[in-house]
Length: 558
Image (cartoon, rainbow, N blue to C red; front, side, top):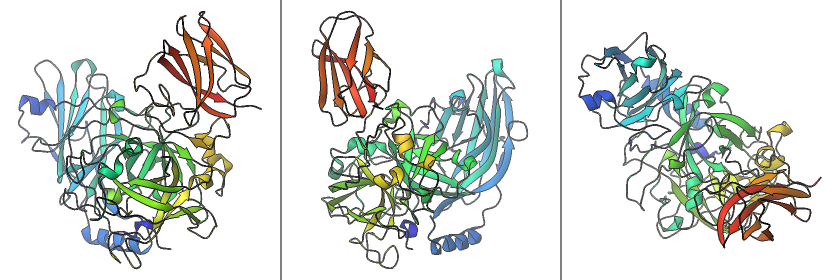
């Protein structure tokens, strides 16, 4: 079997800015105060064995496995057994540690213990102070006590923990490993030359889909590698942070390793072939929810559904919950948005029809696609694109990437690869309920939790607040109480306040109005839903012709 990940890995280009992963930003105290760091204690990770890594990587390629960009080297260092403490004039104190992994092109830190008390902060930054991550705060504490940072260029980093006097001794920080990145980490080496930046003209009109796609840094048994995925909407429209990717990206991953996965938003050039790119929007940790249980496409459609361990995705990331189509209709013409080789976000275009096909021998599990030349290149997929979504012309996900033979140059990614070779995407319709294993792991259980029978759902920037599947203002507005929800024959609507000239509209996920009614001026209203089909709707409250509130409505008839 020739897999997606036969492509040679060119690790993602780094452009590090102030860390925004649910962090306070700001500069570390030592940099603001001009403190001397020459007396700060230094610790080194276990040595990196480049020869052994090269041999293992070669075998992984022969076995059709994803190529690693980093290896986690053991290191044990914490607040009470390493580093240098300094007492500050106001009674607060500062702990600093220099962490080094000799020869690394970049490093990322893994914490086995991470608990910050109120008003304490932690930063990680380069010794020259030009790259800063943080400040991380108590908001970043998690039940399992773990944490991880993003990539920091160079072989060393400074870790700084600021502890106010009021919480002295309450902090717990322990570093248990250093991700030693040993593949290309500069702005020059990247994905294939034919790839198209997502903000080129080919991405015009696909901004929501662009903002749904994430780069995934995967930790698996001491190795780190790249995949792609997408934040997806669900029929409950509750902003649940579900990420959809490929089963083969996490087939052997343990629960503890899932807790250290990182999901990067907005890693893309600001322009077409030019502009800055910042790897500073990511969330850490996830829990496995659903999967194809098929050996990564051998007996099914190769999907993995994950839920972020954080309760919400920060608004500053501008997240979009992608819509999807599990009806089994492929369509003609669409896009794939992905991170080839972990590079900045790209877009590939197909103009023909998706063809029903297979990957591992089971008929009808995958869509076959051949990419088209466009104004700014001829996008394909590469290692790191695995798990990325393919969108139909209606801009809904209809599949996720398992593999294929597309490549910018003939035989450039292995025998038989070329710019006109096909790729294969596991079907959303097969993900839904057709894969082997436990029925509890099927995709429909999570994306249609009320079993409404909905097979097509629109995307949204704000599914749990304002417009779901209907264009309109981005800001959240008033709240309308709807009960029961899910509804059968009738729902009671309670308005936030009595108001004159109020009108209720109900739209389906295609944006079509299915109900319209004036609301009596007494703050409540009963809406008959008996004629509605099972599924998801957006209920809108208008006053004087302006929308003042939108809320999800689910209809399930027995």
